[in-house]
Image (cartoon, rainbow, N blue to C red; front, top):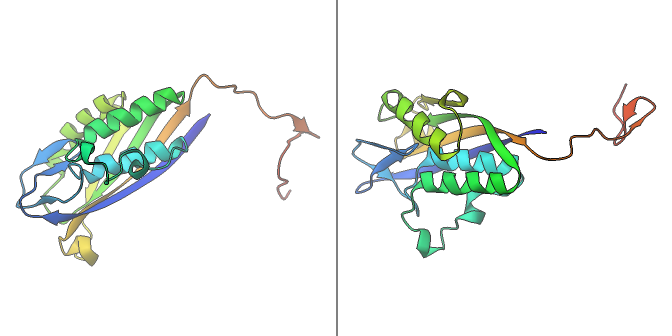
Length: 179
């Protein structure tokens, strides 16, 4: 069975913090403020993976009230989410994500991000898509107050019963659909 999930995250930019996106430290005057390293790309991907298996979101698994995970690497969060997928007999088969930021330029860092994320979730780099765009000066992102990311993950449920539901009059049972 194939399932998909969507993830989104946004963090405010703050001075005195490192800017980490997709596990890559990027030179910039500000970094993202958060309980962990505030890597919005990794957080969006983690939420998409968790959503695909119906396991909530990263806030449930890594609450910002837990001081033991303060400053935690979001790549470690992705590794833990990947272990949860394995425990639930699932595996990622594709991830596509977009980063929304006015600055800095993201494109030069995408190959390194793809490599790090692929290793964290046991996926070939060719199955990781990362893009970046600006918000064209609109809203908080456009005013460079923060950075956001959105992601979609496709997950295959493995080792499960793949039999189709019994058919009734040539149609699957369940809610009726208009003919």
